Amino acid sequence: CVVGGCRAGFGDCNGMAADGCEVNVRGSNVNHCGGCGVVCRFPNAAATCATGVCALGACNAGFADCDGNPANGCEVNLNTDNANCGRCSVTGNPATCAAGQVCTSGVCAVSCGAGLTLCAGACTLTSFDPNHCGGCGMRCAIPNVAAQACAGGTCVRGTCANGFADCNGQLPDGCEASVGASCTAGVGACLRSGVVACNNGGTACTAVAAAPGAETCNGMDDDCDGMTDEAITRSCYTGPSGTSGVGLCRAGTQTCVAGGFGACAGEIVPVTEVCSNNTDDDCDGMVDEGCQGTGLSCASPLIVTATTTFARNTCDSTDHGSDTSCGTTGSPDHVYVVRLARRSTVSFQVTGFLSGGNEGDVLYRGSTCPGAPLSCTQHNTNLSLTLEAGDHYYFIEDDHAACQAYSVVITVL
Image (cartoon, rainbow, N blue to C red; front, side):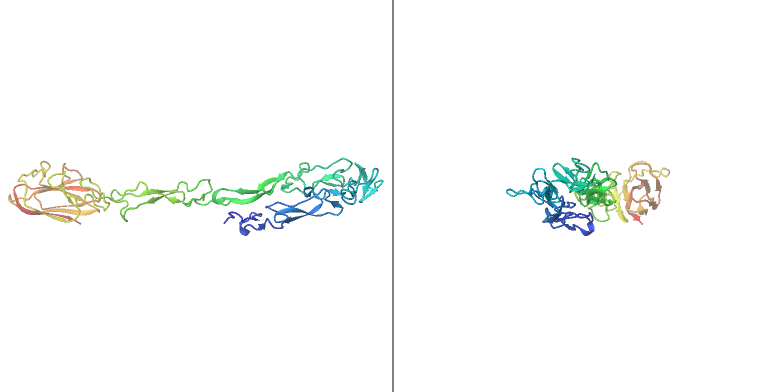
């Protein structure tokens, strides 16, 4: 889980999702006043925070806010300021030392006391006065501090101003780093929030991006690559169960777009069987079922998909084969094509009597018709073969002479 966004007046100042937006930035927290990392500071004075706004508190002992401007805090040292000696000067009631006098310990005096130095008409302790640090006129100017500071006659870095920090520890550039601003790490589902803070002499965001996950079709960037739902597809099929992969029927592909899968593209579902195209159009494992030709030529065969008996009472009285050729030429009496949904044993049997006293030939031509036979019987009643599924097999019946009623039984096991 991540912090999606804080309620108005609250902030996730520690960058930890576990405690949510833990700080009331519109309360009285002087370290997060009005926003995360906004610290209330005023020179020579205490600071307060009320409803998210920094306010000047009580002045430090010996200091006063004589100009009424809280931005520079309690800017006057009442112990040493000749214009505000002991108190702030006001119109009609000045607290200004006369010419030749200096303010010492808040009292106008003719000369400076022991350890003090008269600088610009005022007695000052040059070992601690940031305006006269180590000597008169030697003003401290450390960048981005809340107030200049002097110690032992040497300028030192005091408290950093709001939004700044001394990350490199170098005095000349003072509080050189801008900190406390909101920042993020990662993209998509990996996005996390934090603040800018000191890190190894510089600055870095405290946020740490989460580990990416596998991309799913949900409208989000799960793998954190800046793209949403990219390259997500799945197989689809809207036809009846058990028909995909049978005959012409094939599954299609759905592509994820904006968190949802689109239409099933490229699928082929069952349609009404089309006769004489050698194709399983309705995807039931059978080809051209329900279609029957005249049975008088290769172009219009009788179609057989299961055990079937055909009653016959005519033939053309011509033997189109011979005892040696087994019926390789001429026009047959009847043509049958067997179509199999599975590997089967197929037998072809002619029963009855021909007027000439002989029965006819049965020729097996495989998937080619017309053409030379692959197997046949001559003057025989039965031809039996084991055939594979998915192909079509032609059988030819050719009687030798004028015939009487007889039957043809094609058995599929």
